Amino acid sequence: GAGVSQSPSNKVTEKGKDVELRCDPISGHTALYWYRQRLGQGLEFLIYFQGNSAPDKSGLPSDRFSAERTGESVSTLTIQRTQQEDSAVYLCASSLDVLTVNQPQHFGDGTRLSIL
Amino acid sequence: AQTVTQSQPEMSVQEAETVTLSCTYDTSESDYYLFWYKQPPSRQMILVIRQEAYKQQNATENRFSVNFQKAAKSFSLKISDSQLGDAAMYFCAYRSPGYALNFGKGTSLLVTP
Image (cartoon, rainbow over all chains, first blue to last red; front, top):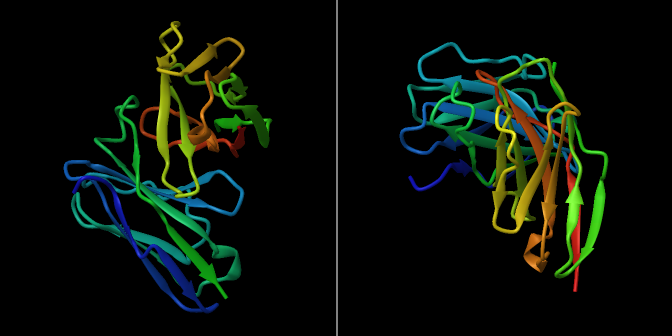
């Protein structure tokens, strides 16, 4: 597609429920990144995928968070047993690859997750 | 670990005036890039300008320019002839090969008529 697409745009759920957030990267981009942005804060790195290599999960805050990506296509970020502290905007980005530093990351509009 | 610090939570500028947003970073790497992103209320992150660490010449994109001081690890953004549409959160970010972007906490820019 023309840009990075994320769905849903907004998600409200009850504490303890599981949620899935979806990201569709720009076609041809081998690198895909997930970030979390809490209210009034900067972006925190969560995880990135580069082609078929093992993902870098170093930013995931707990084992309740996981993500999958099939090939160089759609990625899903899953949060199990949600807590109120998980409320944030979750942003996805993609780039041509992770090693070419000058390649910019293109961001989606994010999913605003609210845990009641 | 690399850290990015934006010491100005909020800044204000009058339309047509110039404003400078500050950013400092800490790294032991030699190969890296620095970026400024703009985030309007729509939430989308928009790349404003980028600077390669190896280049001494400061990057410029129309009304946006940077002052890159590598020895001081400083990377400030200057916005000239400010416009109402420049109002947004501005994030400074650092990136080295094989890593994702490392962001500062942001500066909220208010543009007054």
